[in-house]
Length: 71
Image (cartoon, rainbow, N blue to C red; front, side, top):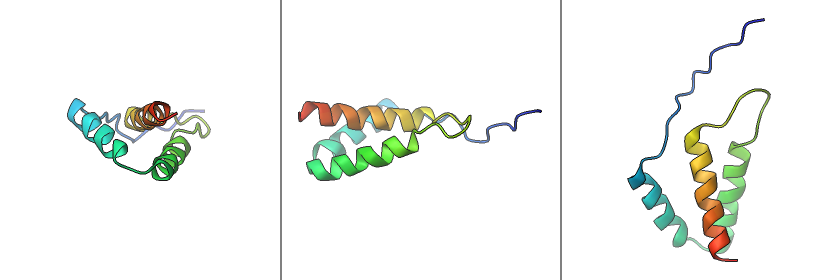
């Protein structure tokens, strides 16, 4: 059986977008960052054979790094 092509673009965050995301996360409260992390984690789940986009993974990593800084 043939697989359907993945129509999602493999979009990535630019360096500027990553810096802006880091800045915004640093100014959120810890509960807000935890909520953001939970959403990013849900977005990165493996559902059947669909992989998360690079943008979703970059977001998850940045939120995780912010939480790790606050530990």
